[in-house]
Image (cartoon, rainbow, N blue to C red; front, side, top):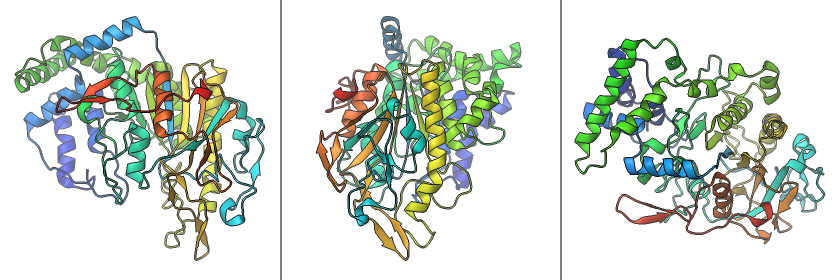
Length: 497
C-alpha cells in the first residue's frame, strides 16, 4: 500500500481513533492491523491503496485481527496443543536482495579472478567448510553451523524468488517487475495457523522490523499475518501493547469487553452461516491479548543486561537477533528478521542486491565490507547465546536470501557487482537439534550450478516445518474449497537430522 497516501493514512488510523474516542488504549490487535497497513513497500515498488473504507469493513478487519480463527480451528489447535509437546521456534535472518554465495559461504578461491571475486577465502574450524575472509567470527564457531551450498530454483526476480523461498510455492507466471504478491501464505503464517493463537497473547509469527512485504496470508485469514514489531534498535522502542498491562481500571476493562462484544456481534452479522458461533472462546482469547503481561514482557529489551545488548550490537540486526531470542523463549513459533540496512539513513546498501551501479555508487565489495561486521556480531552473538542457554534444541536459526548471484563479476565505471542467479545459492543453519559442523551439497568449480546433492527451497522449508512440528503434507482449503498442501514436494534434508 502507498504509505504516502493521505487516504491510506485515514484508513490506517480510523479504528485507532474509534478506540481513542472510547478512552481506550490501542490494542495489540489494532497495532497489528495498523502494521499491516503501514508495512513498508519495496522502496520503488508501487502499490495501490483502496482508499477510505466503511466503519463496517474496518470492524470486520479488526474482528479478524482479534479472533482470526473459527471455533473449529480453535478447538483443533487446542487439541494439538494438548496432545503434542512441540515448543520449538525458527529464526529466519532474511537477507532480502540475494546475497552472493561467493562472498559468503561458498567461496571459489581456485576459480579465475572474474569468477572468484574481490575476496580470499579463510579456513574454518571445520575442514572443508571455507568461508569468505570477511567472516572470521563465523569461521571460529563453524562447529555450531551447517551450510547448504546446493540450493537452487528458477525464479530470477526478487518477489518471485522470495515467494519461492518463503512459501514453497513456485509462482505460476514469472514477474520480472518484482511487484508480485504471493497466492499462498508463507511458513510463518502456516506455523501460526497450525499452532493456533496463544492464550497469553504472544504472537506466533513476528517480523522484525516488518514481515516480508511480498507474502500474504490469503486463505488462512488476516489473523495469521505476521506481527510487524518495528525496529528494536531505535531510541524509545517500546514493546507493542506494553502500556496495556498497567493502569487498567475496572471501567476501562469493561470498555474493552464491550468493544470485543461489538466485534463479536459484527462477526455474527457478517457470517450468517454460523462459522462465528462460539465466539465467546474467541473473545476470551482476544481479551487475554488485551490484558496479559506476557506480550509486553517478551518485547521488553530493557530486561536484558546492558552487556548482552552490547554483545549483540546496538543496531537493527543485533537488537533484532536479541529480541528474536526473547520471543522464542516466550513461545513464538517464527521470527523473521528483515536484514535491511543495519543502521538507518543509509542511501545505499539497504538490501543485499549487489549489482554494480555507478549512479548511487553501489559496489559489491564495499557493500560486503560494510555489512560484514554487523552480520558477524549479530549472528555469532545469537548462535553463541542459544548454545550457552541450552536453547540449541529449541531454536533453529536460518540465514539466506531469495537467490544467489551470477558466477561472473560485472564491472561498471569502476564499480563491481553480480546479478541475480537462482541456479545456485547458500543457506546457513544452526541450532534446532541439527547435525552441525558440516557442509551439505556443493556447486561446480565456478559456483554456477549444484554439483552434488541438488536441493530446493522446498527441502529447506520441509526441514524447518519438521522442527516446528508442522505436518508439511497437510492440506488447507483455499477460498474456493480446493485443498492446497503446505508443500507439494520436498523432504527434510536428511544430512542435517
